[in-house]
Length: 88
Image (cartoon, rainbow, N blue to C red):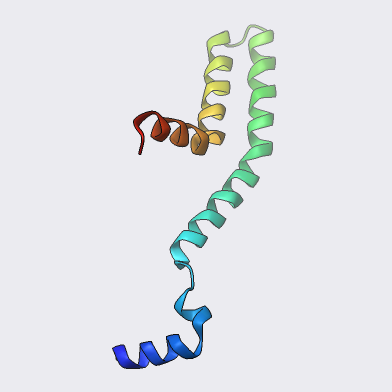
């Protein structure tokens, strides 16, 4: 079996150097999820802001929504920043 894989890898080098399918799938899923959540996040900020403006909820809800959106959409940059701090 290993011999067949080696022969196929030498004949078709693109197959031998193919990327991990789970990595590309996870990246695609992350991009699709963020694309779907972007308008929802904007609507959430508008609705919570209007509710806080009219006194229906406390302003801390608006701050919590904004902080949550920053953590959701900025997670890659936050992880990169923390890894840079520890030299990983």
